[in-house]
Image (cartoon, rainbow, N blue to C red):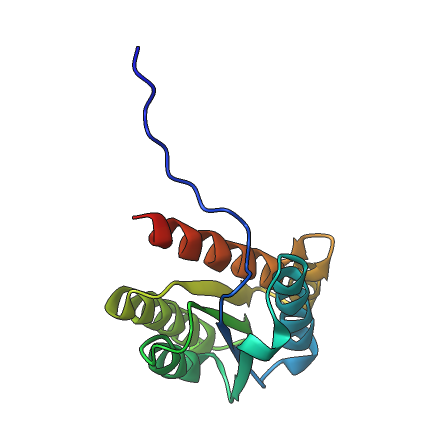
Length: 156
């Protein structure tokens, strides 16, 4: 049987530029996501001088900035980091859903990978777990997904 050609992204960030769009809301969580993403990229060869972090008020503002950065031609990938924690009103559902849709649209319209590092949790404990404790660091995971997708796109 003939071997099937497989395309996979190599986890090498050398000579790539990245934008990180991060919320100021819940910054005690988001700062840990940023640290994880930056550390991951640097450990895989990224130059910190080729990274830009843009802080936005909250998750609802992330898609516009992610789309602008992805469409600028300056970045190979964009990493969106934030935390929306459920409260006692339906606000959580609206913000989480619209931010998610908007980030996906930013990637699809620009053709630039946008990593989804927006935590959507029921409580603060779950957010803390996903920002570097029991459940790992979702900033690292978003950076890894962007890096691999950038490398896959280069081969297509």
